[in-house]
Picture 1: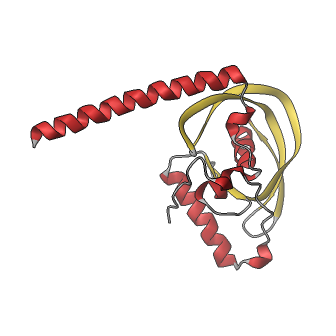
Picture 2: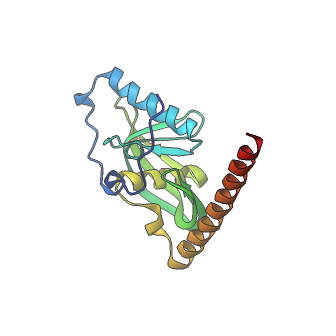
Length: 180
């Protein structure tokens, strides 16, 4: 089932999610959570999706890869490499792309849907997505990680983009009226 995204001002996006207790759920319920998150991420064409972005108060996110990673109770246990700036977007903040500085390598630990604990080393885009989604679960909005100049530039670009989209919608609406 495709779950609706919560509004960007929703309190759940600013709330740290509690640890997921597998004993409170059946394996079918856990699998339903996983399937719904994966289906929603794909429908919204995201690279990752945290449960709280669709209003679910669980400490879990999905990350696009082959195969898709489902990470319950994720955490970062180590950082390596230099920090790099890269433009990040977010399904909760459409058309807002901000340069964020993050470590290029992370050592992570999380639980699979069956409760098994995994420790892995991630790099590049996968490491960045993991960090972004983990921030969601910790109630951290990605824009707070941006420096002031990058955030202001991103907000100006979003505003310009939104004006263009609005103009195109107005033109389309006017041409539809003319046809009627």
